Image (cartoon, rainbow, N blue to C red):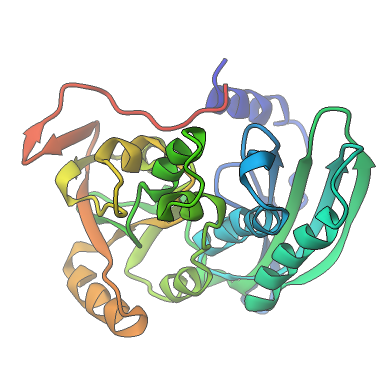
Length: 311
């Protein structure tokens, strides 16, 4: 059973549970309307030593930063701002002196940057390496929420920044090249908090999610939820310096935003985005009725691309 089959199976096993007014499994965050035209969103992500980071190649400060960043990215993908987090730490014996302080320095520096409160959590002992878990809470206008199910035929598919740097960085780290720009990108992803909230306020943006497993997997989530297809031009995908198209499509952990936009208003959105953030939104394809076609120089690729999967 693969990762996404496991999630589907868990969702099916929980169908008899009450919803308690939550809009649950299927998006980057669960949603709870709280009245007054506003909603809270909730997400949870775990990071495990040896899977999400290598302690020998990553400072405690960087691990603290990344632990929070990947959760803030999920909130940003919903089109609202993060407001609070809970942090749970499962730690082995024998951590170096000052490790916890440096971890929390990295964590709280990013929290201060985005005005996020730490409001609770848990600590416990681990027998098998460091395990970190964050629950993030966001809040914003309900009408700003972006979901995977809202892509429409004819929409333009865009990404919010260059891709592939994290996968290239992991490759560098595994080759013991720790001081490259790509390695830094992998260890310290920058969540698109301001970008996500800005895009949330734009009604021409239909579907949106963050890019955590590579667009070859993440785009499929939008297509499945929206019951549509897509055509993607591989040469249009913006690449981080030194990254390859394969790393950009299948590598994951970029934590940029993947979105679909009404075609007639896409150019205006791109112009407004560039004026606001001084960088482009990159169009890479179009939503179609069904199927997923990857093209290179407008010639269909025969191979089937897939992103990262834990199982």
